[in-house]
Length: 239
Image (tube, rainbow, N blue to C red; front, side, top):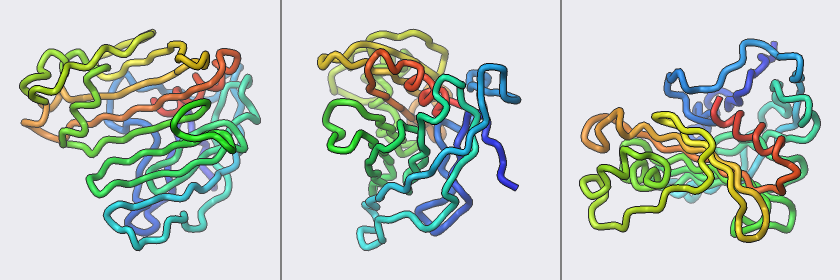
């Protein structure tokens, strides 16, 4: 029986070393995580198509860059306002939601960092509409330095953690902030809106000195008129 995923998308069980158990968003237990026990009056249960993205594996360059044959749909709970508007895009780096009929690719770096880029046909990850996701290699500087614009603890301890690198500017347009999660919205220079969220738990592990800190981020770039779609994608990432 296919499970109904409530504001969360999981990759299928292990299918080769590169497809082992990554999920959308952070999976560390936290009261700040979004959750939904059942569909509400303004949501719908929907079987959405799964699109497989090519994945490049930096540590295994000879590995095929295509995803193995896996289920062609995912059952999700979405706001009624975005029903029929989204696909699940699956890769060796994880699975995310994005508008239908888009394309993209993913990278699993030799250093453990994972990125997913999805955009309209003919677009690119360098600008314009798109969905971009970054999972830092946990327990490394890769999970600390990118958190600077989002995590006040990292900024307060910047020199001890990162050294002489310039202190990053705080992300503009913050609309919600907790100890671990920041959500933001702002207009980009091309007139599109940026809807994003970042998760960092560096302070829980005293930076790099104790444990495996994580940093994960999603950024959705869409016209302001499609705010409901962008927010649904970000909600899924954080669930």
